[in-house]
Structure formats: structure tokens, C-alpha cells
Picture (tube, rainbow, N blue to C red):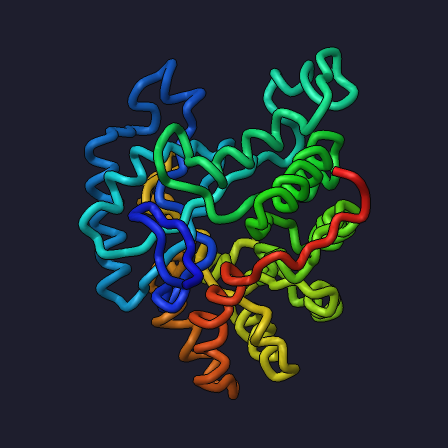
Length: 334
């Protein structure tokens, strides 16, 4: 029986159901919350209760599973997440990795390959990621189900390349799949595929995120023709690309037969200290957890996307992504 780890224990892949592949429960800034308690009005008990209400509503709306993409760098704290998920009936998958657009924290300036303190064997990053996957996050029994790296507009800096290669090495050791944050407008997914491929990763085990923020069909088809999944996972967010263009692009990709390599989500938080809910609702009113079922799916169906393709993107592809096993082949000694 193939399973995937969740906050509430291992779940049979067949029971994942309707799955949103890129969401956030909490986004929090420890470097500000610790020295300035209550920064941006944060109150832990209240935020947990409000997040639990949001997750309960998601479950009642027909969502069975979400992947919480919050890793270190975004304030991941597994005990807070477990409290929020408790009693909601929602299945929540956690991941590991590191979120930054440019630089790693200061300890990594001194420790690791080519640094002043360079010890033999896999570097510190790899060991941290592998520990989350194999043993559990923050001393709990909640294991990470995937590995995350980021490449945004600044491109592949020295530290970004280090993270991508560490994620690849951790994948080869654990067989956990890889998920990414990208800047679609500058085609950063291609950089990720190149580096991961150099490390021996089978690109069919990779999900290139934020791919709905471009209408560049050549770029998107190149990612999928190389084997990867792509995430239309900022649905409802029209800061970079108009929502109508996002819908038309998704429908066209389905028409071309790529539905088996696309997943959908919102990249929406339940609670965050980056901005207030009032600010979000004022600036991007359609960016909410109701958008995919209430707006996106009806809109692409009007453009000819079949019920079978919707089922593929929302249920079958997440099962296939987490269910694949042992398809990567190292090209060099790890």
C-alpha cells in the first residue's frame, strides 16, 4: 500500500482526494516576532483558531488535502501547524527545503563545500533535509513528503545553486519528490531543471511552481516536454498576469494534451504577518481559497476543458506525483 506522510499520519495515496498542491497555513517572520512580540498584530492563539476555521471551511468545500509549502525561510513551525489542523478533517502534507531568493543564513557562509569549515561527506543542508524526510520535523514524528528550492528573478546565485544541488542530493537519498518556487517571467524553471538534471534527478519527479504567471507557451511546454509537472498554483492572484490570460493559457495547455502534468492551487496563506487580511482582500480580492472551485474550474470548462482533465489535475496528478518511486539516476558519485 503506497502512502504519503501528513500532519495526522500516513495516508493511502488513493485517499488524497481533491488536492491543492501549493498552499500555506502560516507565513511568519521569527526574526521580527521574537524581538518584537506581536509584530503586525500577531497573536498565536487567535491566529491558530482563525487558521483552523479556514481549514475547516476548505474541507467542507470539498478539498481533501493541501500541501503546505512553508519551509524554513517562511517561518515553518510544525507544532503550530498541528494545532491548527487538529479537528478540521483536512489532510495536510508538509515539506522541507529552504526559501530564499538570494542568500542562505550566516552559518552557511562558514560551513559547507569550499567554506572555512568544510567537513567530508554530504554538507549540512543535505543532512537537515534528509532528517526532515526520514525522521521527522522539529523532533516530531511528522515527516516531510517533498523537498523545495527557489529560483526567483535574481537568478541562480551561489547560495541558490547550493540549495538546488542539496535538494537534489537529498532527493537521491530519500526518494522524496522535488517542488519549486520560480519566477516564470524570466523562465527560471529551466535553470532549475538544468541543475537538477546535472545532479542525476529524473525531471518527472519535479514540480515547477508558479507556472501560471506567464502565457509563454513555449516555456511551459518545454518544462513539461522535459518531463516535469508544472504548478498553476497562484490561482486567483493577478499581480503578474491577468486572470483571464491565466485561464486561457491553462485551457490551451489542456487542449494540447498536457493535463497529466499540471496541478492547481492558490499559494494562499491562512494567516500571515507579511500583510493583514484586509490588505490582501483590498488589493487582490479574488485571491482566496474559493477561487479554483468557484471560478477557475467553471471558466476552463467553458473553454472546453473536460471533466476528465479537471479530475486529472486536481486528484490523479497529486497521487501520481507522490506515488512515483525510484526513477532518478545519479550521474556522478554522491
